[in-house]
Length: 538
Image 1 (cartoon, helix red, strand yellow):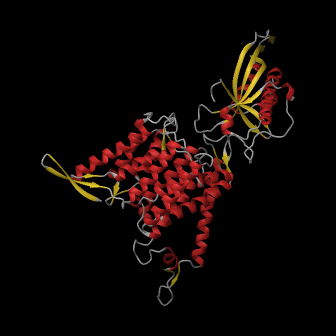
Image 2 (cartoon, rainbow, N blue to C red):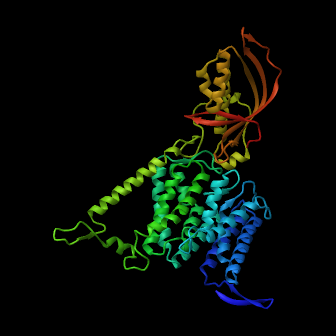
Image 3 (cartoon, helix red, strand yellow):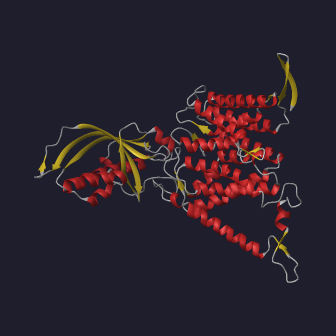
């Protein structure tokens, strides 16, 4: 830092400006470069105005706090890093890329940046702040506000492109340079290796999650690869968990800290079924370990001690049982008993990961392992009987490999499912109802059949479909469920009422326009009707 002075009204106030030697300047240059790439080639749904609101709020607060305490004007380097970290990760749904000066949700950026900055001054222990400011601010905000108001930056930034390659290179080169200079590379490596291994166990047990940018669940190896190579995870490991002010000071303690964050992140991710929850779990692992680092300091070597080297600490003898002559013998830390204990501990960790992942093993929508949909079976309805079938632009963007033949297979299944529903209503047959419908739609259909069997009436539609469009469908009750395959149908329908006491058959109604969007569920090799919505849910 370089000190200057500013004289105001007869009072002289020191002015402290940054220098190029300040590591915070190097970190800021990396994050700013990523922000520029995000605004230009990566399509970040983040405006320049939202970034400036974050930066201005945190900077003004820190300038005021430091001036009040020290009567000095100090460059708010830490506050700007905190705010930039918040702006880089925080997203407000509804913000569009390219709307550079949008203030949509500006109060979230201002409030979360302010809360993050203030946590550094309000939550302290032994003279130091406990939490990484941007981390704790984001975690608390996501937990309190939920995914309908705010959400984190996506794990996946898009298919490989020059922009993605440039951003990844900036993060990796800048991360290695900064962590090496601050002697934090061991911590970052410990986190990534442990996270990758632990997440591999979770993924191999059949873990799935949904994401708004992916059609259907992401499972197994695809789930593992998305997370361990995610630019957001790289930013987390290089620039968030490696904050020198909120991590242990010893070399061994830092490596152990990184390992613990990696395992805890995978353990917290294991039961999550949505990307939103998985991202909050990763961020939350650091918040938990920021508190746990204090008891951790009791079981690792003190910073600067003779044992504060990983190999030396592992090879250092530890005390065993007292010998008959009263001499306490020493045994290697990596002796047979210790290795056996380590194997047992590893086994417990594996079981914990597998058990924790139980809720996330049953996907809500099935996709084939190769990412394709449909099957090579013969059409349930003759191809010549199908109305015109097209694929929407939104669906082509989400699933570029979706072929016209697969689209016809899906359309044929919808027609077959509607025919099964009609037969179930006419014959009051629960078995026929299960041939074409699942979930809430099946429950509604079975409820109609039961009402007729109790003496009520049932209305049976008869459809004439003019055209069908394959579209993505989003559950309006769950924004984080991700898109499903859907078919939008256009045509007409007539309705005939049956049943009553005594049983009667009404006359068909005049044809009425019919437009619905059906959400599909892949069961075996056939798509079933899971729900229906009015057009416009795409």
